[in-house]
Amino acid sequence: MISHSEKETYEFAKNMAKNAKAGQVYCLSGGLGAGKTVFAKGFAAGLGIDVPVTSPTFTIINEYIGELPLYHFDVWRVTDPDEMYYTGFEDYFYGGGVCLVEWAELVRVVIPDFAIWIKINNVGENTREIEVENGHFGV
Ligand SMILES: Nc1ncnc2c1ncn2[C@@H]1O[C@H](COP(=O)(O)OP(=O)(O)O)[C@@H](O)[C@H]1O
Ligand SMILES: [Mg+2]
Image 1 (cartoon, rainbow, N blue to C red):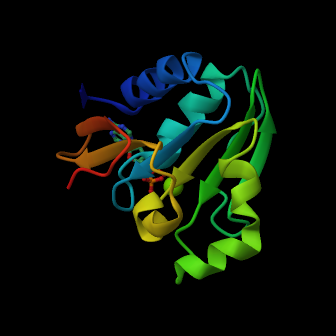
Image 2 (cartoon, protein in one colour):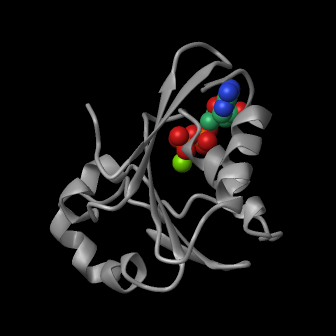
């Protein structure tokens, strides 16, 4: 889809979250300023989370309690995918909540095959192309 505004990306993510099921892993890829965190905020809203959602760049994982638990990752600071083992990510990826991973392409070796990939391309000041693919990273 083409998003023409931050709000449109937020609403798209919010609707997607309404169909989220326990155990799903959503991977967000796209450069700095693409709108991954905007997407995460909308996604959290769709799960009924009404506390402010901020990017966990320094903490790597933030946990939120919604209709399902949401584990929001930002792995931008992870320089080696092996560092992911210190986060205990397996308990989250293979647990009972929903995971949303910003910068997932940096740690794709640890991303499960069943993950849903959301690729956000910055194609203009307020325009973003959002592609959704199930199960693989198709580039
Ligand atoms: N269509 C759009 N969708 C999402 N963000 C947009 C859009 N147009 C402009 N923006 C702006 O782009 C920025 C995205 O920031 P952010 O979500 O923090 O990016 P990321 O987490 O990918 O680094 C915000 O300042 C937002 O207002
Ligand atoms: Mg971000």
